[in-house]
Image 1 (cartoon, rainbow, N blue to C red):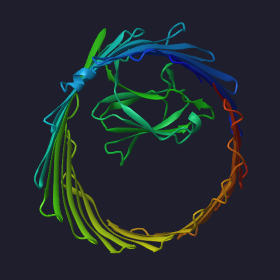
Image 2: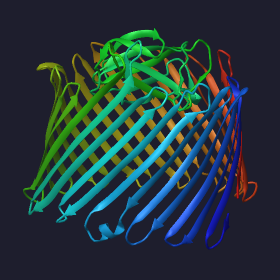
Image 3: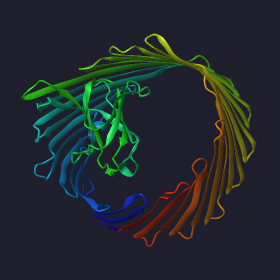
Image 4: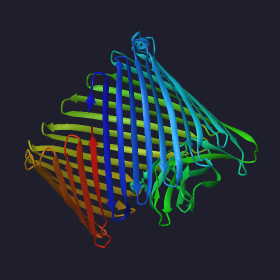
Length: 623
């Protein structure tokens, strides 16, 4: 690092080489340079450049990212201007570019004068590739403003507005999205009474224009998604699972891009199972072993869509800029078609609290919300809860709570849930605490009882000696025709400051419509022998009513040879139906103040063969 009164510069580099038995070798090299300028205390600027190139097997890809920023700060306003250019290249594919700039403006003077807090922003970006014909040619604009104000130190007002505009020059499709959000809250205490009232109003409008093709006009539907079972090492394999949250929208088609920036779709030979659900718990399968994109036989109005990879045809499919995209398809149109969606929602919340005495207090909370999408079905949410606490005695306290929630959505049956809870906490001695409780839950759909459960629990914490602690927990759950009892004992002993032993025993039994039991014992020992050497070991043993017995173990050693050289090695494994032992080794070496090295290796021995292994070498340089 070179520093002067007006400049600061740094350079970093890293080289990462990885090899394993079940994947091709990979090599990633990365370089970055940053330079900051301080013209005056009020005017600053920075420049950065980052380059990364990676090889996987015989294929390669790289990226180049220059950035530039300017900041102006004074008593009146704060202005931040930044620009970024991204170039990505991939073997046998054209280069992909994203050029963007953004500006943010705020006013410390208005905030200090307690007039209003505000932040305004504007930005543009241009995405395209150099192919012929092009796959990507999109221009985008974003803008927004946020205002907030606190009145009388009790009432807060917040407003925000945001807009986005996109134009796909290849399809001549445009999209304009605008949203408004207004929220307010008021909190105050009058003696023993606390009062809170809050509300939020949201409105959004999305208007898209697209040319109709042979299959109609296709419009993107805004959805959220996440991996439920993520692809290991960013490679699609069987049982990879993703969940797409559609919400109140209506979807006709769904597709998946392994690289959305370059608009690279998932290969057709990857097969998926598709399921739908309204609650994310109960799923209905609508398609088996299909390719994406997939057109549903009728519009999907379920809240969630789950997609599971069932086959990849033995191919290696890497995901880089993964994204699921949902579409609304309007058929029977020609020329340019406009599709507009709107969504209005509001929610109010009231909370009341009252302290009858120093020992007795109550709290009540109620909320109501409504969502009005167009097109789509409206939904309502209502919930209320009441809690009572009593703690007259130092070593004894009682708590009770009651809650109710209701939800209605379109023509779907109304769902209801109720909960009643009681708990007691008793500090019998300074070293002995007893906690017990009971909870009853009830669920209904369309006025009909769906499920109910009763749960009882008891927990005892004891400090036998200053360095010997134990916890005993018990719970009994009664639901439908089943009863489930669980019990566990935990003992923690600090034999000396550097040596800690933890032992656990657990028992679980299910009876009623089904019958089974499971037991487990485990022990963990951690020993910091010296400032140089540390050891840890663990052993678990599990057996159950099916006659299964599984033993797992682990052992690790850490050695600090010096401030610059550290190592860690060990092994772990299990003995059961499938026996397996894994050994690993890691060394970190700070060669100098500018150069460091890290090497790691792991290998596994399996009873059925295979014996996978991998090793990795990383070298970093910092100046």
